[in-house]
Image (cartoon, rainbow, N blue to C red):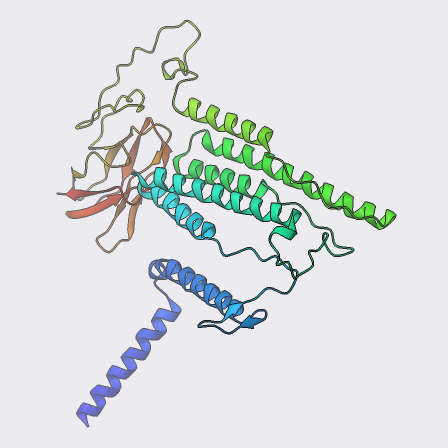
Length: 374
């Protein structure tokens, strides 16, 4: 009986533990499961698309079931461009978070995939203009779209909008003028897309009155939009790099000498190219420096049992950083203000018990260090 009582007590304790998780869940653990949930949804979506593909259209029997397009229909072949584009975009986001060559590699793969996709789309469109070259001779080539059907021409706007959105995300991560530049380019592209849609609507509306429906002319390259977008992005890069206006002149009067406050280098840091002038470091109990998307000071010592100050020096020009102190279990004990470099902030940190505490950058989790309170 005693063993049965212990078993029932253990079962009851398990039920209480489960109900406690439902009433007061571990939100940090649930948030950590969000990427897994999204991955599961993406996997289900791909499985559903594959199932729909296998069940669509007429088929002929071979070693594998191959979909066959209806007579007189041009079906573009499968393309690797979306897969390569997705891999390039993954590498871009990976590089935005962790830095290194991934960003450049991802941008190169993404641009190459989009250009390849554009080339495939143009080929398909040109084949539709000369269907006799792509259809078997036994099948009569259609002269155009079916009666009453308006076929809009392919558009460059989605590709340009995707590129502008990439610049927006880059600006959200690294700050500076790239964010407003990306937003400006995105607005220009969307305005052009709206103009194209309005023209298509006007053509269809005119057909309702006249009974004559015309397909759009073959699209031309949007050289004007591309040039304006490149100029806006290039201007943002030049301003962020401190070329125009020169960083030495920022905040000063025309013709006035440079400020006399001598920048003191952060302990253990060296000025890198493009880092800008290092700010003077105020007095604090602890000094932590960020440079090159990493903490220069990865092992620091702080007083235990009393509040203390941290002088956080951000030497990455235009890149946001902060200091986020956590417990051994991963709970946030102190989150410092996020700010762009080159600049310095003094954080007021509450008292910590003696021990070791990891700290990270909230924007770039790959930046890590340890504070030892003693």
